[in-house]
Length: 531
Image (cartoon, rainbow, N blue to C red; front, side):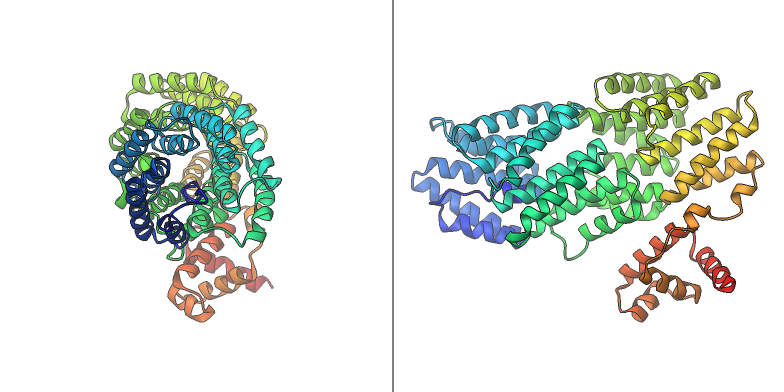
């Protein structure tokens, strides 16, 4: 996202600015910093106040969005603001406002106001690149606040300008990343697919994007795929964003780590999640993933601390606030504090009422149901859960739907309802969790089905899971797993890296609906005998 915000120079820019842009495109951020600092000194000493202000704004974005150094980002932003205060109204004020928007990223109401200033200046001074950036940033801020219709209208307008060829190729890549992030927040895979196809077609003649933009798009797309339940594809995208060939941006690497850690938690791979998060536990962006990990480890007090730390810093980010409050309800219940859980559930309901779309309202119903169940009011919980499932009649997002079916099954089992009702709901949950590869939830559902006496459903992977086709390479990997080869040996045999082999093994386990290499080998042996 930062790459193209810093690549719209004036035609008379000093050589240092151009050299900085070239270094940025090569992912050499230290050289970018040095060149731009030299450019700033040169512009200021020559009396080019507007140029120096724009360069200072670029440096603020570089420190905040690439290095993750908030103190130096604030320092360069202050220098930029002091400089533009000496000029008349000019387009450089728009670039300074854009830097403000990024430094305000935890306050979405402030981002919305900053983007409005940027848009006004961009239109006044006929800067189409800046105009489209302002539309995408403002649209994202609106969507994060739950104003989906208004936000997507801004993004659609930006996309129309891009498709018409009104902006530079560099801006296209940056906007694609913002649009994917917006779709992830709203769970809108259809719109993401439509936008991606148009924007990538627009980029093709220009020869692609800088490494940092490609990496940011992989992170945003991976997060989107994770949220809509396409976990194998999400894993590929996020691992790619963390590979040695990806951008070395500090901010992107901890963002990718947080997204992959979130995925690892629901996959039941807690040690991997912990290793991903450990270097970044000071970052507010990882608090949600960290809380889920603590909860999975049976450490609800630590989970609550992480959630409350994030909630204290977020302003007007209604979608993220709702997500964290839903997690806080679960955490307070694990701590045994029913009053605190009830308060968090009501706070979540208030947030959900202000947000367009059914997802957060379903989360609020789930939270209230959990509190009711903890108080022994199973009939009330059942009503809330059925209401939530009605809101999500299309089956999206799938993990939430699976959890709703599981919670409904648990409450039916504890009520006077026939056992068959609970079994049907638990089977529905199991089908979703097996498709997703959500190991921890599969185990919980299997335990409930055993308690309900439904041994038939537990004899093996579901037909839907077992029928998921393996690629030719995955079939080769499965055959080598059947013969007991390690990831390193599989990599050597197939001329791929051990890490790639590990990914293929993980994909095979997910598609087969099994939990270990031994189970996969046994299933492969049975299949080969059957042939």
